[in-house]
Image (tube, rainbow, N blue to C red):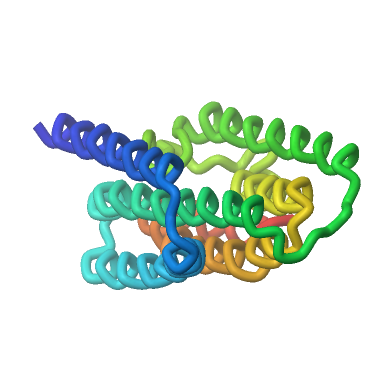
Amino acid sequence: MKTAWILTLKLAGLAVVVVCLRLVFDHRFSDRWEIALMWGLVALVPVLATSARWFLNRRPTPERAEVLTIPIHYLEMIFLGGAVIVAFRATQVHRIAHVPFPQSISWPLLQIFAIVATLTVLNLAISGLGLPFAAVLSKKLATTWLYRHSRNPMGLSSLLFCIVAAVWLQSLHAILWTVLWLSPAWILYVRIYEERELEVRFGESYLLYKAKTPFFL
């Protein structure tokens, strides 16, 4: 019964994420709403992480961490995904500051980081028996291949992909937003909640892995 309930929660959450991101993608917002969404949604991520950590610390058990992480991950996907869609679309409509960086260079870099991000997903699936976010939480601690050199290779490659995408769009506004707003918010989320959640689920093995493996590189 518990397994069926968790599976239902995961599927329902995934459906909500898809619907929300599709609505954001299809809808054209006013300038005020664009500003509110691209900055406000990202600002909610550290708040979400802090609230989730407080709730988890009230009863830090692996079972509680597993269930709590499902809605938290899905909310993070909605907040960050929605903000990225609005921000990158807005930079194409409102050319505030143009950066003439050659797209012949940024485009191959974009493809490289997309491939690396895909490889990190495969790495997690093989080594940790899981998938990104709450779709399938890792059953084991992934410590091999890319995860041997970085605790967050998926996050690193995804952030680099977003930064290069902003460069490819030749938008200084998108570059600054990604580097100074999106990236710090995601890093805070990992520091505040995800590391604590992994510590609760994997215990001493994660603490040892954390002690010897850098956050990024």
